[in-house]
Amino acid sequence: MRKPVDYREQALKLFPWVCGRCGREFSGKQLRELTVHHKDHNHSNNPPDGSNWELLCVYCHDNEHQRYLEADAREPLRPQGNENSTYKAFAALGELLNKE
Image 1 (tube, helix red, strand yellow):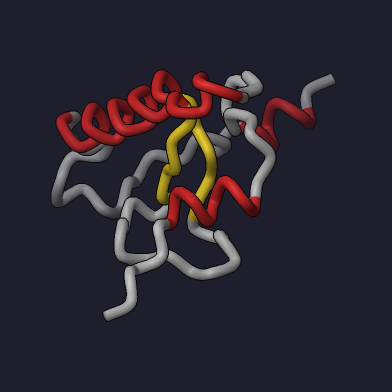
Image 2 (tube, rainbow, N blue to C red):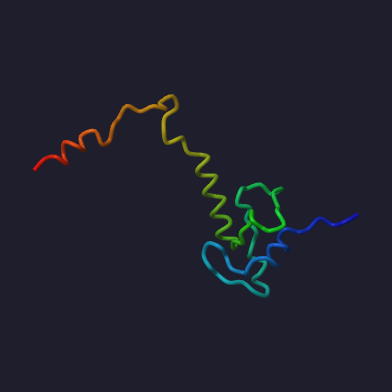
């Protein structure tokens, strides 16, 4: 039976050992602090070219996931049922531009 390819191992071969967010460089024992982030958040989506991955340090990786958790917890910006607003932000713009 063949061992599945470790996407972290593969990502470390493809990309420079630098956090994609903060720019911190890694080597030696510190390399364990560099993680693979799945851009689409699907851990099963592991294309061989690494197009769904980015290397992030553990701090930036935690921050990235925290942002998504907070966004999910917030209420929608637009109230449900109000899909068509009647407000016209630039309605009086022509009048303002024609004033001398």
